[in-house]
Length: 359
Image (cartoon, helix red, strand yellow):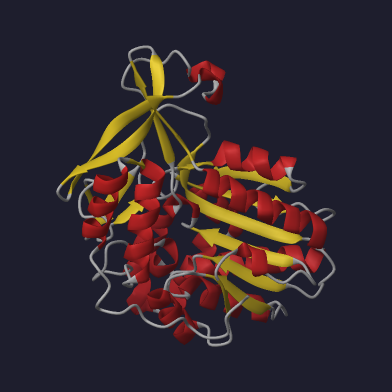
């Protein structure tokens, strides 16, 4: 059931995750990379606010208010052209609530004032979200989202943190990649061979050492959202870094103090992510009944929504912020920053109009 207040803070007496993982692996044997990643991120996000200069990374809403404002206006435009129905705003993994706060402010100016629903399991982040958006309703997962009206869904840098399974090519066969340990030193190893049939045909004869990633958790959530949109109406905007797969290559990475780290070091003390396979998500959403638009590069998406014009207007109103606003615009849109690697994908409900900037 949805929650109406932030969950309680984790206690300081929780056992250390590396010790628990090491004990589990010692007793039960190596575990899949996905299981390792899921456990590490559950502990990581559940015990801290990782955002900001003092944290481990900064997301687009924290870089510039314009990002959230433009997403709010994008949703409001769709809602307006769909006939202004009653609707719910939903955000998956809403960070500190910054994007929602900026988006809701922009929506309000367009006459849209939806109820707010956050899908968030981290008690630490729920506390920050409650300060930014006091009237929010929290959910543990998407199954308890309301079903009485269209949903306006945003998922910014949400899917990259979901666990990925890995397969590795060894001596003419594909093997599931597992995580073993010695004391609390964790390292990836090749497990038992897997049937060739589970590997995309074009990739089956890849060279030894090749890695393939998949994210069943991401697929399950996208299918659930697409079915909701097909039945209830609405839209979902997914913004994340990724590629159009399936493809060879390992993208699992760890971020600590704004730099890259070994993803198998210090589980639970650094952010583990993997690039999002947009082609797979788009295909699964379409199979589940949603209209699909994109993906397009974030720089192009924001450019068509008017980020340059909005940045200029803000700089004119606040001349002292001009250099910072210009730098934020560059970071969000330049191809060597977030403009090309990050992409936007839209899912639309039956009968809903074509979205702006993604046609």
